[in-house]
Image 1 (cartoon, rainbow, N blue to C red):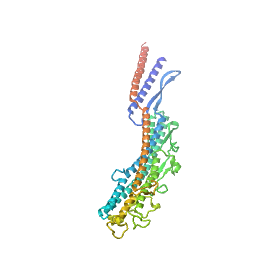
Image 2: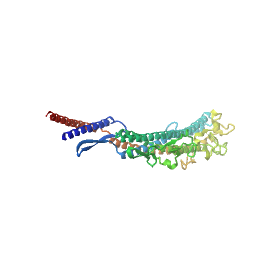
Image 3: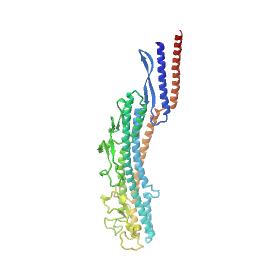
Image 4: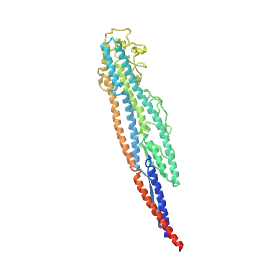
Length: 484
């Protein structure tokens, strides 16, 4: 009986050593595989009829810190969120341009002021008057471009929302499928580590869209919730999200617009409270960009356009302008008032009366926008008033800049506001990236260490040889008995 036990012990040792070698080889093969969790074999003494029966392979476990993984996923969401905001304000800042850059908003305002100064010194010069008209057109076009850029950013955010909702649905369906497969494999006593790694990778990809919290359930499956408690998956079927693409955004589409795309959860339109349950990742921040940040930026550039329009529409500067009318700058769609200011930055144009390409005459900049006849070619009074309208400190009609100042001051306040927001979000994004990187490093610390695995392989080689030696000795002992 002792010889039989020795043989059983050695055979179980060979089995355990072989299985351990399989685990080590898998670790080494996946040392550079993203998302791979290091495996360790679990062994325990085996008892047969009250006696030692060798070693039992209890299973293979994945080595990963659940706490670090949970924090890492939350850091993914935070970084994705701050990246959305940072990228938006960076784009708006680039559209406005730095003051020292040619073609920036500030430089075009300075260019127009310079053109007015030059025309004031030579009011008889058609070339200089034409320069005023052309510089005004470039300034209006720049304001149009900034507004278009803001709306294009909203349109892009709308498309990204649709894409992320699709990705989220597909990923949740994949997690549900892996849950079912893991349950089946566990029921058949088969290793599920690879399936769990695949499931972890899918959940990691979800975590940048919404901050996700994983909760273990029976039989190896998991449930998923947002950080604020919304159910994403808890059972056989995941929550189904849907979103209808808005299309090309315009300044006139806001939260009250029926055509604005909205999120639905299991077929029911999400309320404001429901949307709060998804906050913290890129998805919610894209909604904020589309519905809050971009409209606020649009309001600011519309205010600049209104400021520019009103300063040149003052009848005290040009007596040919009727009260409430337009001067050098006009709204392409009609008269301007508080109700029609939204979107003005996209509609701002130079008055056709001074645009030679539309049959206008640049001399009207000097003589009066709506002058019926050419005036004194040497009269620079209106030109000087136009210059003063740009450079003189006047009360602002916007919340963006308080007090009073010139058009250049208003543009500087606009750029300063955007730059300040970009900088604060850049700081936040850098912090989020640092945290994400440190948590990723912490996860990697539990990953595969090739040197350690090679040491383990050498130990397994010795253990295998020792168990094989036991079998050899038992075989020799049995041979001796049989020869008696």
